Amino acid sequence: MMELVFRKQIKRRWKAAAIYTTMAFVFAVAAYTFLGLKHDPLLVNLAERLLPASLEHPLGTDHLGRDVLTRLLLGTKLTVGYGLLSLLVAVIIGVPFGVISGFKGGLIDRIFMRIADAFLSFPDTIVAIVLSGLLGPGIENLLLAIVVVKWVNYARLVRSTVITERQKDYVTVAKINGVSSFRIMRKHLFPHLIGNVLVLASLDLGKIILLISSLSYIGLGAQPPAPEWGAMLNDARPYFQSNLFLMIYPGLAIGFVVLLSNLFGDYLRDKFDVKKEVES
Amino acid sequence: MSLLEVKNVHKTYDNGVEVLKNVNFSMERKECLGLVGESGCGKSTLARCILQIESINKGIIMFEGTPLQNKSERNLKPYRKNIQAVLQNPASALNPKLRIKDSLIDPYLQYSSQAKMKQFQYTSEENFVAQLLEAVELPTELAERFPHELSGGQKQRVTIARAISIEPALIILDEPASSLDVLSQAAVLRLLDELRVTLDISYLFISHDLAAVHEMSQKIMVMKEGVIVDSFERENLFSMDRHSYTQELLTMFE
Image (cartoon, rainbow over all chains, first blue to last red; front, side, top):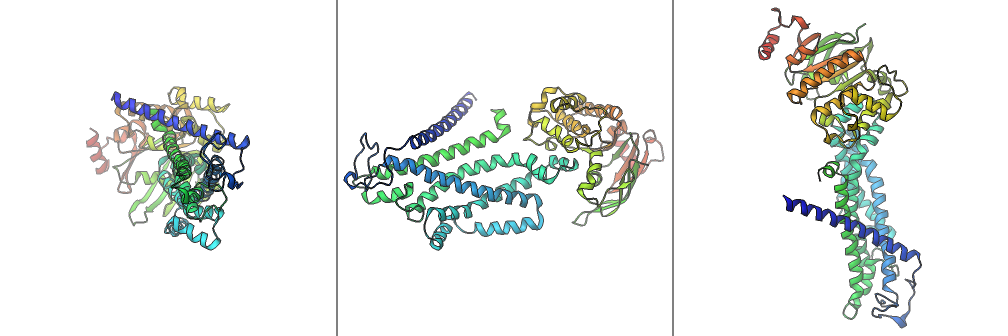
């Protein structure tokens, strides 16, 4: 029993530590970027190509003489920023879709869910590749592909939550009180949705970052010379025998951000569970 | 004019099961009408029909002389204010994500412009919630809690407070004490009885428990398989001309 409590405490502290690390990380990146970067991330300087780490270039330079640290930091904006943007759009489309579908039920629900099924039947990588093929490669088209694939998950999650909750007595009582459907959704159902959606979103963020990076790696996402992590990995590929770290840095950055987003998801799940909070 | 009149009400579910067959009764202001029957006999369905959350197939439900069915939600609202409900399971009747005060204030917010209150005066939200909690004999500090931090009896008192918060003319009590332990049951029923007198409310008291109904009600109806088989004044429960089914229930009572 004591051991269990102890382990729980460590776990919670570890999570809190992870959250603070994220914050510190984000602030550091923001500060560094806004205080002015020493190097131009796009400036080609062949005289300084493939330099090892030094005070001037803390992580060395790449095959075109660009500072790796600068590119890595600006890559945060591209990879994480676009990841968040596409996630936000997916949530904005998916949540109202799911709420209406779940709350209204009947024909509207059936039509909405068949549309969702149609979107679900394509694997996300395939959709992204097809859209890039049709619209041309580029990060905007990649984002479009991500939104197309991801909004369905939110619609379905929200719909199932709404269906479970609207059968409960408190919704019946609200109806007996003449509370409007809109208000029932806003006051009674929304608090049930927000936790679930945030948890799914933070777990999804990791997947989306991986998707952006992997598609950029095969040349379908961000186009050179944009400092996207997946694209940087691809750029470094020919030099991995001589300059292995050129590949390791963006790889670590991707891994780190994905890990943090997953940890953040776990943390949110605990936080939005009202019951658990009190028990612990 | 009766407070509530139910005439020739029939209700059939989509799957063809006929739950209510020609139900007729009326009730007056300030009285408690008991409705007894075993589970599955259609008691709760009748309650849901009166509350206008389920439609009926045939018949009329009149509140103070106005038929309620086929009204739009907007036209129904003045009647909704006057017919409230306390349901069987308090755990699911309170939104687990809302604090007690937010659940309690919800009905009042719907009617704040038209509510003419006799007992409870709205000065501030806190004050109003405190008055309600006091009325159901709960400590006022419960306002900040979440439903899962309360006991079953406390939760049921909160749902009672919510039902009386807009001072309705009629409250439908659908097995209000069944999910509670014996002590809480007695306390909740006593509280309900007191509130009826102080607030001039009528009750339609639905229960499978003939003893509780007899304790609470002035008139009693007995329902069996969707039909009201017997209807009598409280003191005539033990008279010899009771329906055989009522007498069967009575033997369990003793």
